Image 1: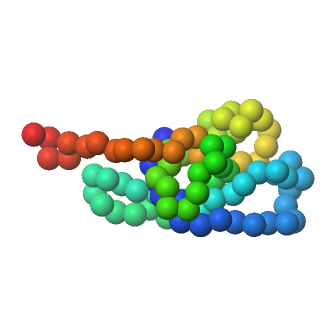
Image 2: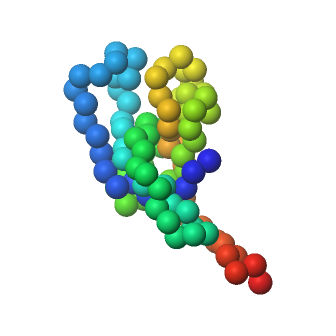
Length: 92
């Protein structure tokens, strides 16, 4: 699973027919241990997330399973909105 921040929306009026009805969001992965940002990804929103929210994302077959269709051409799905992240990075 990936932690990321929603940074945008995507509107696509023309797309693969099986993708009709899905909301697409642009997510910037966050690596809390290194502070580095990953490359942005497009994810289907299954939980009603919005711009600025920190989310939990699954990729690959888990992304398709999360929306209930393993045949659909989806690579990433938002499965949760994170309320809080608590870390002990120093290992104390």
